Length: 250
Image (cartoon, rainbow, N blue to C red):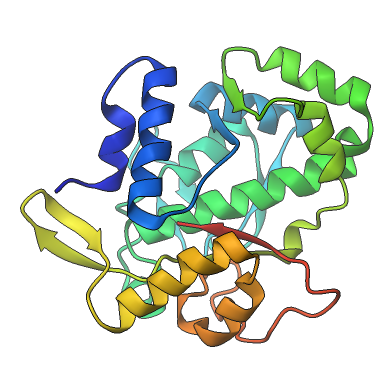
């Protein structure tokens, strides 16, 4: 019995750690991952610096607990690399009553800001033409050497992946929560999938991820659609269009 993220702390050797994380998730869910990416703080700042600024939208004012104690106002603003990193690292300031009411308290709030940042980076990189220009994309990846680790299946290059995803609209990405609740366990406060309704929804999630039926899962379990802060009223509508959608999970 241990927190899931403990699987990522067993070694300083990423090859050992990555394999352990993948195996741990498979043991828990039955879901196989065939590719993955890891970026450190410096890599994140380099990506933001590449587009100069990204737009982030705190749903209420917070004061940083780090360094010079920046104050981030409510609403959407553009932030440079240092400011963006500071904001997406915040956890304790998400402690207002409205955070608890909307499910965005503590680490849930931090996750929401990080998911905002991912979407914002995709938006800005696409706007600057990186997604459709292999030469520029190669320059970016070369500049991130040692800060961004990509684990790809044989026969697929990072350029291939980027070009295949070049039409991805960040606004079409739906974030969800794994059905679980915070409980006190022998290893401290942890997210635990409770027996009953949560276990049923979680088992259905693992199956949907493997069978490409996430649209149907989201329609059946809208309560687990993740709020991302900039829009604190999650949509319960089935995504429209050709049925294709992108989903991220916590």
